[in-house]
Image (cartoon, rainbow, N blue to C red; front, side, top):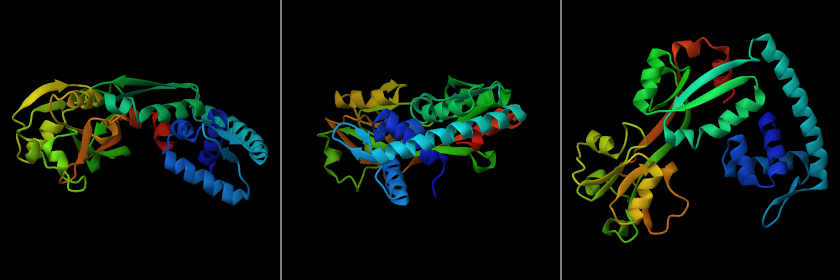
Length: 287
């Protein structure tokens, strides 16, 4: 069954001529986008795109389908605008606070999609530490905050999840183990360590403490998660960072899973003001 997200994906692929960029634009994975396109082509009984070496070209059949899809979405947005006006959603502001690693990865496609659907509502994204997010939620300075590993009773909307991994220099002795075997925080405890906080109180040092392990040789502490991999490559130590923060270029690095596996979740939590805001509730419904 095709839905509006599928039609938006097709239009994004046609406009950007690239499945990966289109997937980012609508907020899904590249593999999910490719699978969705294949399913749509099967359902419609014809090929919509030709995958060339450098870009994607729309077929003649695809041009016809996309012409109707664009018209359909235009009419749908006009209906949505009427409904928004009736519910008081034609104007408004949402203040959303999050820590840097989420602000630069998960949120941009979500915010862009919401802005396209509700151009009259301004979403102001604020960068903060996780402690600041909690303080601002309690003080109702913001309507929404991204909370790390929220407790179930907070009613958070989970928007992402990733695992923590160890990053070692490529020739490190622990890297001789298989990726599947992984490494433990106890094995890393006495290694020269690059501690990356990401603006959060949950990081390698706190994860180790939860397991009764002390990182005894912290050489460098940085806020930016991506910087840790650069410093590891330069031989300053080992690091533990979220998988989503790994650089595309991993030359000179050995990435190992942690044993036992450790994950982090990102959840959107409303302040009391946010729970009473029609704009905030619309934002949460449409994610």
